[in-house]
Image (cartoon, rainbow, N blue to C red; front, side, top):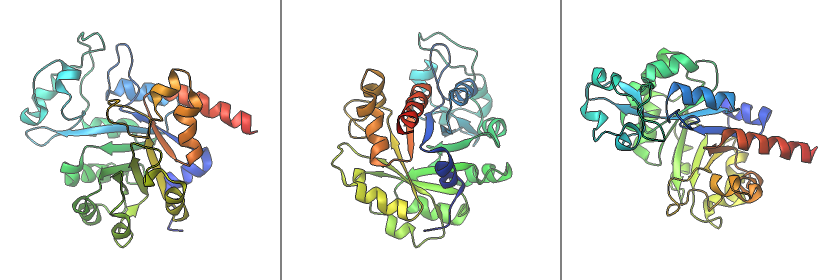
Length: 280
């Protein structure tokens, strides 16, 4: 087994880990706000998943790139705006009404959640130097997990910039990178697996077990952006919360996934608790 890491040890202590997709939003609280992240922790999230965007003058903000119209109700592009302009923006809620909630900077986010939970920084692969430098300046190397598409160029950047930070490639339907990553000086803690069918190689028990034997964790996505693009073989939050918990979340747990990304943290936390009681 490879050297154990903080995330692996947490998995061994707590059981399957829950990643809150952009925090926990509902009602008047939008995605990717400090308020959404606080709600997620209140509901039992182990990991806060969030997105990093870059302003025109190089500042890092917490925001999902390309979602400006949906979440801000403005036809704008953050990468074309200065940091000061972005600070004046406010999210809209689910009824498209303006809220008081601003877009946090990455600095604010890290300061708020230092030593409180694990953090997954996503969509920041085009600003890895600045992002990893900021994580290091806050002394959060063991707390932050960085994911990126399964491209050798991103792995090479991580090897050069932050070989000590937890790194996960995102595999979609195939794994063509693990053998190379195993030869690199990386803190290769596992992989995010995206698969349209439960018959996918990435969803096979044999594939998961090979990673587990090497001390790596497997991340799956119960979230669903579009029914036309399944991320976890049809085993989704939607299926779980509308009546079939075992087919929605139970299948993923029984298959051996270690981290489930969800939009329904409290509901999934309760389901995990019920399963533990049943096993006891």
